[in-house]
Length: 277
Image (tube, rainbow, N blue to C red):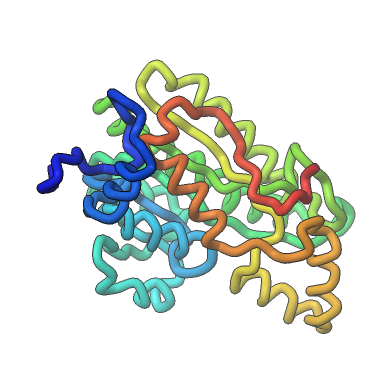
């Protein structure tokens, strides 16, 4: 409690009279409490893009974040950031996932962000491509949830946030057959976990972004051979007329991870600039 008598923790569940604008401003300026204070989070694909933006956002809001990625050299850029610890992790290696879960113990937040965008129709997708994409995009989340969920259940509390996509069961698009299939599976698994463990205090939600300006997207545009044409194509499918930012997705992840979303489970949150309308 600060010298003016405010309870701290602006945007925590409120009990009592509705705060006035003046009170709210005082809470923002005076109380140095984050929206994730005291919570422990694990994030995957934390080295860049949405995963990195979310990792940094969680840490700024007071969480202890164990940031993981297979690209350890890139991940090391987060060394020394207050609240962030880094671990190398291949999310397709279930034994490594189990070892990480045993090392960390209980967590409050699991953010599953690792994924791979495969380009092609069903006729252009080999069985090995199918297996690789499903392993990275779906099976990794399956194994991460299985590893960390039991400790959450012990405390009757936990938030799981899975990265899906607007290209999924929500919307189809060209040349994204197995990618859309995998992200539809993520939405289905999210709803199943939400249903099965709601009585245990577990919430499970997914985020379904549209086209987000990330290093991964820029790499795919460069690989197309005509980056300018590729950018025009991606912009043409966004009614908003622009690409989304990683931070805009991270903001929704923060909400879903926090106690502000305590009555939200089994939902998919669109951050798509209107693409899915």
